[in-house]
Image 1 (cartoon, rainbow, N blue to C red):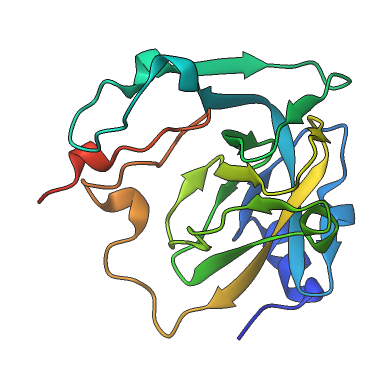
Image 2 (cartoon, one colour):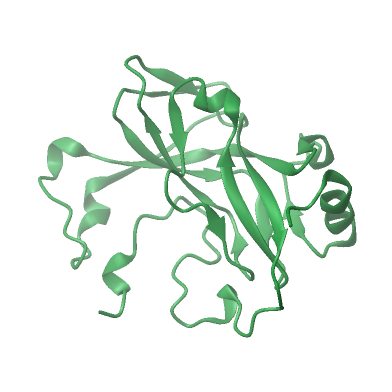
Length: 191
């Protein structure tokens, strides 16, 4: 069952759901009837498409083809049509062992024809730190994205039982404690 605004607020205040945020914003003002909005931080990554002809998921050579950009809060990033970027949330989160977080893009963002996380829709119990957002512009015109803008939302659900091994305790968990946007680590999968 999805948690209500009062349940989300209670979990944040009790630190059962740990959320760290920039003091400029009031996290409690980002709570909606059944979700919690998250904001863009100032750092993102994108593939330098003119320097790469193929992405081979079994090889770790991508980092040289990735550019990391940091913006001030008043400078937009212009997301061009069909462009894909990895951005990171301003807020940091620690999902308790009895919850799963479902990630949804905000309707206001979708109405710009910008897709956030078209795949990885939930976050496992035990995940901790920032969330890397997969952002694509499917519009026919460029869209400006600003650091600090509310971009997506979490809906939280109780799971049937506390997990045996949460995400942060699994040795093969690839994306815990990330600070910057994290590119794929599929090359570390056990085949």
